[in-house]
Image 1 (cartoon, rainbow, N blue to C red):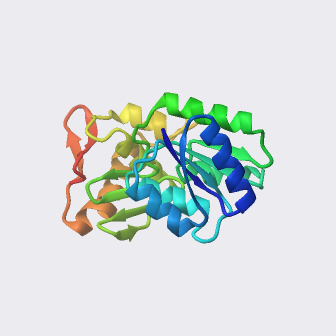
Image 2: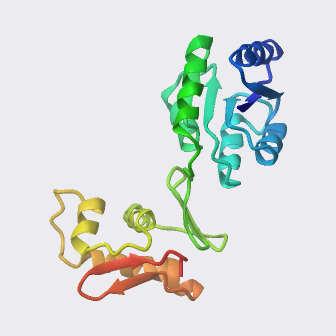
Image 3: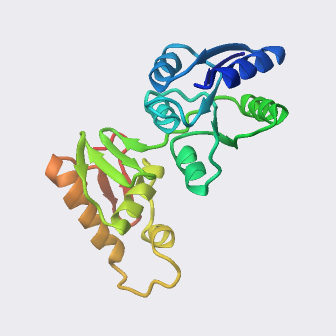
Length: 225
């Protein structure tokens, strides 16, 4: 098993390397975000131990860039901070686990072993169909690289369609997932919001991604139209 350690503190990097090597891993060490992105995209590592606070780009950006590049090896993010917002930011960037400093090496090694047992599978931080892309954490949507502004409900509806692309979703299923139990609006609200979405992500781009399945509901084409 080959691991990448991204840590700018020389002493900590050395301790991590020695400890992991004693556990039987082959270990490479880099000290900044630029080298981390290069190494993570060029070498098929089995896992990455990534300090959040490294010279730019920081660990959050490194993790996000690796995921955008299609690198799905497990990532454990380390940081001196223990704020909830930092943990959330790390997980939204694509990290698989999060360990605040100071930490016990035995716990870090156990977490690495657990992630390696889970194996590598694609866990994209963004949802995509063709050139239609939604980043749930950043709440941004682009079509062919062009940003599209959506309301909160439009975003929620598009996220549901993207998570189930290629599947037919009934109006009832959409209502249950996008509107809460307290909703007491008009019965055609789904049709109205589907039209809103089409007017923003399809028609301006000459696409037809959202299909009406007569008598059943709606479906987002897997190729994004």
